[in-house]
View 1 (cartoon, rainbow, N blue to C red):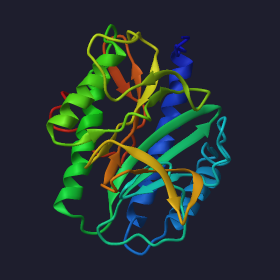
View 2 (cartoon, rainbow, N blue to C red):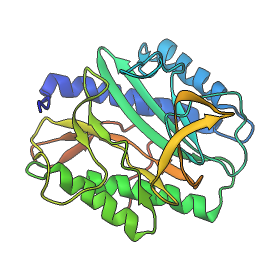
View 3 (tube, helix red, strand yellow):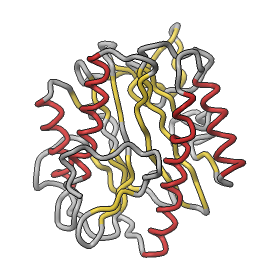
Length: 272
């Protein structure tokens, strides 16, 4: 496995791209209200990325092997949708939860982040899932420092999540990122401490756990017997949540690359 190591110039490029991705979510936040469609959110995001930021929405027409080209500029996954939901003309309802996943390309560098949004007044159960998933992501982030192994990150996320009565999706994981959307290493959100690759300064990857309120089993979403080629849902139709940051391994710890003025603050357990 060849894991790219970023130099100072690479890191600066990624810092800019990461901030821009997060600023798209800042811009969308006041628009995520009952009655808006994810199609409308997609258009707002696309126009902002292209016309304001002078960047490129990475998901649009993205087509890894075996996939049809992704048709939109952001991913919007609602309620029991786990990931890769395609924006459409269905209005969001009061109480829905939605993950909005944004990746921008600026000067060749990819900034990748996602946030959960509660539409209107969410249920206590939905709010708890969203908060625990946010905490789970940060449980992984705070493990990052040179010498730690990737298995330590996954183990921290899994142990915390399962202690709260939730389950971790295993079929999707975090990934290295830079001038390519997906690079090595793969970053599992479950695992055993002391296993897999050791972290070294200059590594950069996403931590993006997908957490289900019910069982961890997932499946392709077949609406009316048809699969859109992308959307994944929980098998038991339980709620699912996801948060994502891009993280750099520094000489002494970590730097979160996808922060902006509107980023939610880290949980209380995060030092500093």
